[in-house]
Amino acid sequence: MHDSSGAPKNPAAAGVLVSAKALDVALPDMAAKPVFGRAPLIRIINGIDLDIARGSVLGIVGGSGSGKSTLGRALLRLIEPAAGTIEFDGLDITRLGEDALRPVRRRMQMIFQDPMSSLNPRRRVGAIIADPMQMHGFDRIDGRIDDALDHVGLPRGFRSRYPHELSGGQRQRVGIARAIALEPEFILADEIVSGLDVSSQAQVLNVLAGLVGELGLTLAFISHDLSVIRRICDQVMVLQRGSIVEYGDVDRVFDAPQAAYTRELLDAIPLPDPQQANW
Amino acid sequence: MSAFLTVGNLSAVLRGNRQRVLRSVSFSIDTGEVLGLVGESGAGKSMIGKAILGILPSAIEIIEGEIVLDGQDLQTMLPADRRRLIGATAALIPQDPLTALNPSRRIEPQITNRLVDILGWSKADARVRALELLNEVHIDNPERVMASYPHELSGGMRQRVLIASAFAANPKLVVADEPTTALDVTVQKQILRLIRDLQQRHATAMVFVTHDLGVVSKVCQRLSVLYGGKFVENASVPDFFAGPTHAYSRALLAATPKYTDPDASLVPVDEAVIEAVAAEVAAADEEWRHAR
Image (cartoon, rainbow over the protein chains, first blue to last red):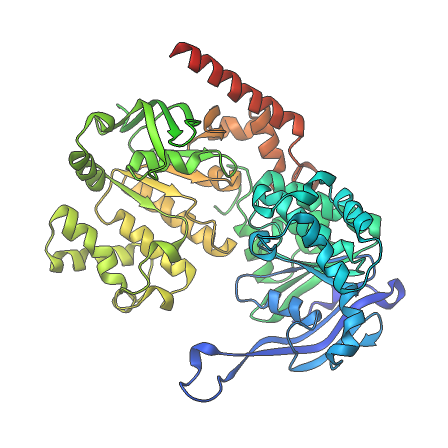
């Protein structure tokens, strides 16, 4: 099942930043919850092994309900794993308490799918970027806000704007600015371009790809859309019903997919080409 | 063959600031033909579909132009006659199946109401037709689906139900407004094939609104690219994908993801291209104002 041939070659050599071993996640199945008493647990993620080398980008792909977001959130300890271990920079964080976890939290950030609901509509962009920095006790916050806006290619004047005054692509770049302002090493980007127009989609992907190189970021990029993965990922993991069906270098997976499900996903992408086969 | 739908020189404004949101839009669609309306959010592509179906939000007012449906000019008709004509000949496949279905009612009445209310069918006949339609959209257990509530169905199933409901009254024109945007790629493929099959089998004229040029290349014969409520390019699908003529269309196509050609896709749209097309729209506005 796990396609070892394409899995990252000797990740230890490159320096693994994030790794999971035999990771299981189970969540309460609210649809089956009795009126009184606990909901039964339903297994979402089954025995996932992964290694993300420092400075590399892992794409996590699958249909809706495949468990890709759950996996991402478990890696950040936003959802408690049922079994298995998660390591961050060599430290086992699987059972770490909230206090012990706090310094690690700054080093791993998240960018959300819907910038409209993940940015406080009543705060200005400057404050949105500043808040997490204040919480983590950063100094010279003012300068850091400007730096973050520069990095994502937004004018510094945007500090005084409200989220509703920005376009979808600009809002998403504010989300990126907020994440990188904390100087994290690892960023989880969960479907961050799926709500955007093609032109902003390309722009946000470019900004992110640039930052990975510039800041030496390590990235997990979750998407239901394989067509945007190839642009920025080094490795790609294809999930189906919580299990890995394919995991390997991005060019290998796109050019010679091994799993039937990966081929199905690739074939289903409507390319801008009236002659595309199998349609 | 004469066009089933002709939109001529249609302009609409926002009631508040009198800004034009549709700018002298003209096109026509023959029976059995699919026209793609492509543009980014805010380009006005959905608005055209809504104008045709007479469901524009009240903040938007049509100030000039004509919409001729099946030989009758909608703008000059009495509202009641207009509603009857649209109800009997046209239908909508909406974007979001969850908000388009009433969550507190079972599926059956949501498909059959249209037939009973607008076309005067008996409930029994409408039920037979609904079952037939659910079969046509490849729903395995139509009896059970008819008795279900929307939340009991998956996104793909809900979209199938809406497609069945759109085709229920044998419409001659269907407006599909981003019908697959909310779906997974594999489900999207099934739904697009389904829409294409039904459209071909019934020789329906169709307006297909989408932001995805990949989708256009699969279901449309012709397309129009919109910017700021104005058509900037009209082309046949083969011609367009062989090489669009307008710089903005070229930029949109280059920005579209194409995993088979990663270096030539996902190119961000150049600011200069946006400025040029915005200037073009402004110039057309100026000219239009002078002519009035």
